[in-house]
Every structure is written in structure tokens, then in C-alpha cells.
Image (cartoon, rainbow, N blue to C red; front, top):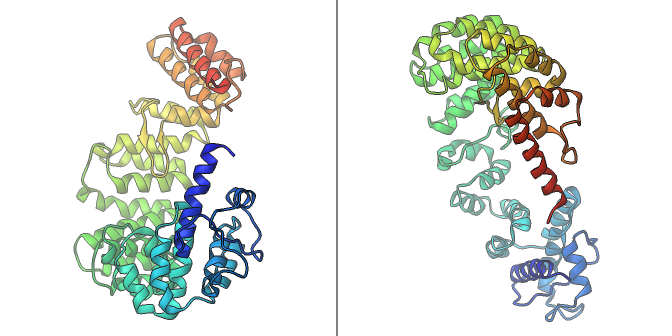
Length: 421
């Protein structure tokens, strides 16, 4: 066995042994639960010095060993079934100690064990389990607690003020009420706070995707202040999916109250993204009409969406706005995006033809080099030459000598990395 594998086995074995309350490496694997991991295979090949022997172990440890065995199963559904079966023999008195030991397990096992144990604890003693969750305000604990006491989690949302509550990930949208309208009404009645306000905005956004007028009326009925304006903005994001023109019309009066930052405004960018997803042309018209302070970043956001459909129109429009097609912006859920990069990724042949038709000069040379590097970065790892694609050959021929040298050096480094030491 290689040293790293031995170290990993030793660490895990000691951790599982500690969970069982024993000091040694060995843990007998229950034959009811099939071995799934390399750790178990290695363990079976090397007898542990303090292995628990069949017939010699304390009967009270049997269910702990079965639980430890189930943790090794790599198939999620079967692992959950085996964990539930093993937990059937645990008692309420064992839960605090078992969870404390589980918190010391390696990361690969820790939260599977803790989640299963805390779920069982909620069956025995909901108040004690809730106290344990309340004392550990983190993302995973909130997930566990919300599955068992969603109404309590809602009342105590601000206990988790340092945790961003995710509406769908924590399942609150499915647990609170069956419809977005009912969810919004329940959330409105809760004490105010950042998490409550965040969830209320998301609920109304979803509602707007089903009944935009009713959601807009609800937003307008909130007390005057930042929450009402925030929920109105969220409503328009949902409305943009159903009726982009109406969402644009209603957004107009809100613009004068929005702050302008270095990267524009978050609401403007989010609405532009929603519009562009459904109607890129409408997004371009919207960008042309908004105040100048919001335009540049929003324009690139809209043009990136259009580049996926019509790269030439997107590139021409961006330049007509006086913006650089290679300017990068951060788009939610993505790394830095550029109009040129999105066009080259989705439509390399058309984008290459557009580049080659530009007037000769530094701008053309720079854009050709950027496009080539972008495209090479998207090629499969085993493609390490500039002739891998016809448009790459065309770009390579059009490059000035120094650009070719940089590209070839990049490809040489890529090839060397593939070969390894």
C-alpha cells in the first residue's frame, strides 16, 4: 500500500474508532452492508491491531458498528436507508454523545453522520435537537433544522443572520405553503430582518412569474420604505419572464431612485439579464433608454446574451455604443464574460470572419490575439496546436509575429503540462 493511502486509512480508521468510543484502528464492518470504498477494501486486507471480534464485542456497540459501516456506502439512497436502519437501535440518551463524536469525523463522513443523527434526535427530543442547531448557526445546520421544524426556522431566521438563507436550497418554498402568494403572506407577517426580507423578495418574484399583476399589487401594499422598493424590483424580475415590455415600462419610474456604482446597479444588471434571456432585442432597446450611468455594464450584459444567438450583430452593436468588445464584466453565476469571448465560444467561424474584416491596425491585431487565446483555452486538453480548427489557422495567419510567438509559447506550455514531469 502506498504511504498516502496508508495515512488516509489510518486517519479514517482512528476517526471511526473514536466515533465508536474505542481507542484503536479496528472496526468490524457489518456484513449486512456491502463494502463500497477503497478504505474498506484496504482495511479488510490489513488486520487492525485492536479489531473488534465477532462474539467478543459489547452488544451495546453493535448498532454503532452498523452505523459506521453504513457511512462507507457511496450510493446515497442505499446509504440513507442503511443509516436509518442502524439508527433504529439508538436511544435518546446516546444522541448527544454520538453527535459529539460524529463532529470529529473526517469531512467525507462528518455531515452524512451528523444529519442522520440529528434527524433521529428530532424524533426523540425536538427541543434538544433544536437547541443543538441554534447553537451552531451555519449553512448545513440550517438545512437540517429546516427539514424538521420549518416554522421554527422561519420565526428565528435572524438567528442565522450570518448565513445567507437560500429559498429553494433549504426547502422553505415547498414547506411553508403550496403557492407563492401564500408564502409571501406568511413571510410578510414575520419579524423584519435581512433573511426575512430576502425570502419575501424571492417569493414575490416567483409569484410574479405566475400572476404578475397580483404580485405587483402585493408589493405596492407594503409600507413605504426600502422593503417595498426592494420587493417591487424583485417583482419586475419575475414579470420580465412573462411580459418584457410591461416590466420595462414599470421599471422606468424606479430608475431615478437607484444608486449608480462602479459596476452599474445590481437591479439594472439583473433585469437586463432576465430580458436578454427571453428577448435579446428588447434588452438592447432597454439599455439604450436607461440613464447613461447605468448603460455601459448593462450594455455588455445584453450584448453577451445576443452574442450567443447573433455574434455579428452583438459585436457591431457593442462597438456602435462606443464600448470594447473585449471588456470583461462579472455576470451572476459566471466568471468574467466578454462579448468577444461569448461570440467566439458559440460561433467561432462567424466571429473569426468578423475579426478578419476589421480595418488593419492595433485594435484588429489585439482582438485577433484575444480571440485566439480565448478559443485555445476552450479546446480539449489534448489539442495543443494552432491548426486544430480552420478558424484558428486563419487567426494564426493574420497575427503579427509577436502575437504568434506568445500563442505558440502558450501552446508549448500546455503541451508540456500534458506530458508531465
